[in-house]
Length: 162
Length: 162
Image 1 (tube, each protein chain N blue to C red):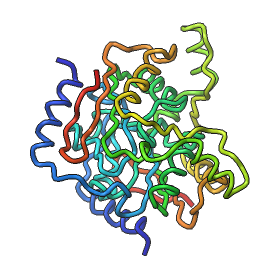
Image 2 (cartoon, chains in turn orange, red):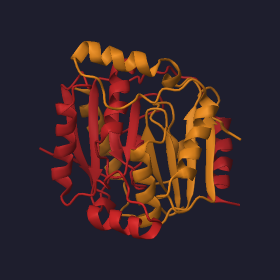
Image 3 (cartoon, each protein chain N blue to C red):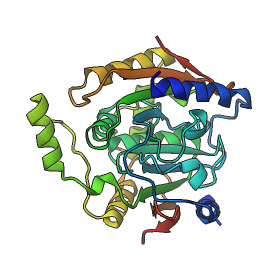
Image 4 (cartoon, rainbow over the protein chains, first blue to last red):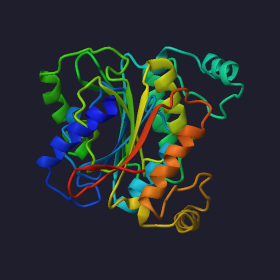
């Protein structure tokens, strides 16, 4: 039995008490963009219930074209108006360099990734850079509340990045 | 007070009973790639605890270069070995066309997005296409368990896509 099979068993138990469907547009009009890190349960860490907020996640919680796509769909089609960015302490993205990562893949599989790893050297600087990419995008219409945070994996607490 | 401020208050309560830090690599060696839809609480729907699995999310739960990036980092640097793909019923991505979406943005802001919306017309077909993109990628080393599912927002239940 794989872990995926175990997750399916857990899902069957979840469905026993599930009460749906809720409406499609997020009830609290927020989109959260966070790192994929396993230790960050976005719903519980931010007090979200099912139906409350869009949750976008990737390695680092960075902003590339694909996150602009998701945020544009979130705001333009589904009515969200606030954006919450979450990076976190002890992030894997602080532990390697882009050149080494891509060269390592190229050496192994004979093909160099057309994308960058988005690894970063400073957590708060990358939160600021991510926020800046959103503010600079012509495709995101509502920018009144675009705030960036660092989640501390030791304490569970968010700190805002100025 | 914004909704973001309310989320920060909820986070302060969460941190009161938080017990960290956990290790960086996901304990159950799984990466989940799911839609950003607000109604899908990945941790609860799959029985995941903090620290268990990487969670990657975007509009549609699709696979673009950025998801290949996140999955490559997840497997190569942080030891995950299974991939779980989750789309869901009543998805916003079924309700619009790529050409209309991008033309509408261009008409409004005078610039055409360099990315596609990734809107799709058939849920199960897009799960299969997403799975295929992972299987075809040279940058994802472990493909023994790459399984695709549809989450039913009415029942909370996952169905596997053959």
